[in-house]
Length: 113
Length: 415
Image (cartoon, rainbow over all chains, first blue to last red; front, side, top):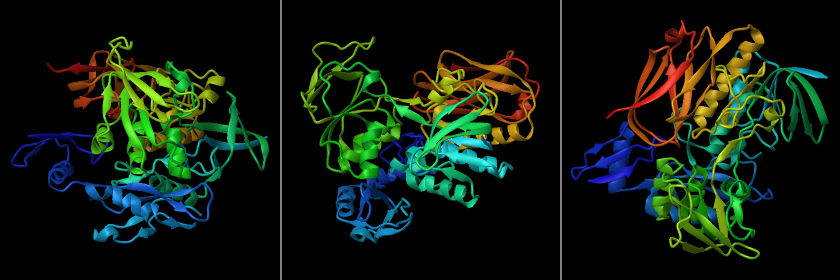
């Protein structure tokens, strides 16, 4: 029996998973998916910032388009920190396409005019 | 003096939602005054994910969430002034603001919505023994440095207080190469959301010490060391429990306080949330001045701020269209609750009323009962309620039709 807090949404359900992968304590179906994923193949959304080359004292926020392997989180941050963008940039612009062949992109989440 | 129908003070999530709603209900003469250089308020620095689940049924980062509201404001052509700081309001709704282009300006508003947000408690608010070196900084300030400007404030960090901003910053600074040594919380429970303890601390093996606080800061010029001790039931340090951490930064995440100095100046009644007292339409007890969002009570989820902003926008629009005097009843509650918003409800009730509150301690398997004169109006079962999560109870207007005595909210724990 494993216990964990669901991180899918701010509700934070307390989940229990038995040895046959039966999940209890989840309010919605996403909790079940989370618990199984967490025990078999944990993933995380990554959010960070990237330098804006033509603005002083300013960075632009970015995120992974989907959750990526938990053990790649620090590699993703390192890759983002090697990059920069130039303004104007907009929500949804792609900074890095298909990072580490994961089919996940790094996208800008902030409008800078 | 120039006149405006509706002036909204603060262009963050509450202010923008209020403006959009009031505009859509026919109030076209709106001015938003924002002290910062962009709309969106604190969401600009909240680059993490998890906003918008209720509002948009998807998970957005703070800047993405605010950009959707900003687009709606701009689409309607609602006027907003940036870098414009409101310095005073009066009971008859004269708003004084200042900016670089116009100098000091007074305008007469027919209605005002306060959407001024909250501020962080800082080191001055708690008495930490020891030295007063540099390197003691609130979590939100560190967040602004890192997420807006790109500066990491320290490399070895101790965090005092387990509020969500502190937890989020523990992860954020770890990802950017800092070593977060621990989070210490004086209460026996965390003040942050469970999911943040899980994904921000447990993911990175950052220890959380409950019932612990900083018993000493050591450092001549900069922070060199922080000592953490266990506290007893009266929050007194227990000798012999000291743990020393060599570090260069002490982050404070010790609570948020509604920012309401403008309202205090005009003697607006203040509730136990340290925000303004309001009716169910979000009007304060001063005629025509409304309030919403974190300047009313501190929220843990922005989606609920937007909803409250819309309530205020709707309330203000109705006020401007059809002024009518009504009477009101009080909202009271038992000692398991720390507050309820709103504090008064106007009668006769014409619309559904949402009661929002927090509990004083963790409560499992309990019924939330709302009654008036011993008549039960609503009963809602809650599996778990914790102090860090706001609870909302929606009351149908039909059930409130004949309301004429105070509302009472109580929690009955099941054995």
